Image (tube, rainbow, N blue to C red):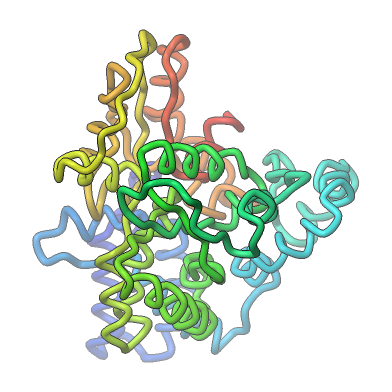
Length: 371
C-alpha cells in the first residue's frame, strides 16, 4: 500500500461501505465524495479476493459503486473513452498512419492532458498498418478463417483482444503459428470487446451487452468441442470471473469453463498427453511479471511451467505493476502509478539486463516500457 493510509486499504474501504450500507452514515454517502476518493486508488487487482478468508472481491464492489456513481453524477468523458477503447481503436485502424500522427503530436497530447486528463508523460499505443484480423482473413481466404487441411490435434478459437488486433498483431500471429505447429486447428469468431474496460469504468449495461454477444458467438464453437484461447489475462479471465454473473445463461458458464490463457492451455494439453511440440532450450533467463488477475484467479504456475519448457525461469516478487489498465494513464494517478512500479518491478527489471522479460498483460508491458 503506497499511501500508507488505512482508508486506502481493503479493510478501510470495506468499513466505509459497511457504515453506509448499514445506515450508520446517510444513504447519499454511497454516491458521495468520501467513498469515491476511498475507492479511487483501488487498482481492481483482485488480490483481496484471493487473499481474504471471506473472498471479498473489492474490485467488484468498486464496479458496483462506480455504476451507481455514474448514474447519479454522469459518466465523465475520459471514462467513456477508456470504456470504449475497442470502438475507438476500430475507427482509428481505418487510417492508422493518421491515428499514429495524432497520438504522437505534442500539441494534441498536451490538449488531452489538460482537457481530458490523459497524462502527456504516457505513450499511447500506436496502431499497426494491418490488423491481426485482416492478416488472418487473408491467410485463410475467409473472413473468420476456415479450417486448414492439416491434421488436427484439437480445435481452438483464438480470442483476438483489442490490443492484439489493432496494436500488437505480432502477438496474435505468434500464438496462431505456435498452436498450428502443435497441430491445433485455429479459428476466429465474431466478437466484441470482452467488456473489461466497461466493467472497470462502471458501465455494466454496456459490458453486459458485449458479454451476451460474445457468449452467443463463442458458445456456438464451444458446443462443437472448441476451446477458447487468448493471450490477454484481463480478457480471458473476464470470461471466467465476470461473464457467469453478467449473462444469466448456462451458456456463459460453458464458455467460462472452455476459456484458457495460452500458457494454461499448453500446460494442460501437455499434461493430457496431447501437446507434443518440443521447444529449443534457451540460455537467457525468462523473468516473469504475472498479471494481477492471473495471479489472483489461477496463479502463476501455468505461466512458469509453460516458459520452463524452453527457459530457465524466475518470477519477480512483485504485486501490481501500477498501470492497472487505464489507471496509470490518468493524470491524477500518474505519480502513484510510477511509485508502485518503483517498489519492486522496475528494480527487478533493471537488475536483470540480460533476461527476457515476460509480462502477459498489456498494461504491465506498457508500464515497464514507460519506466
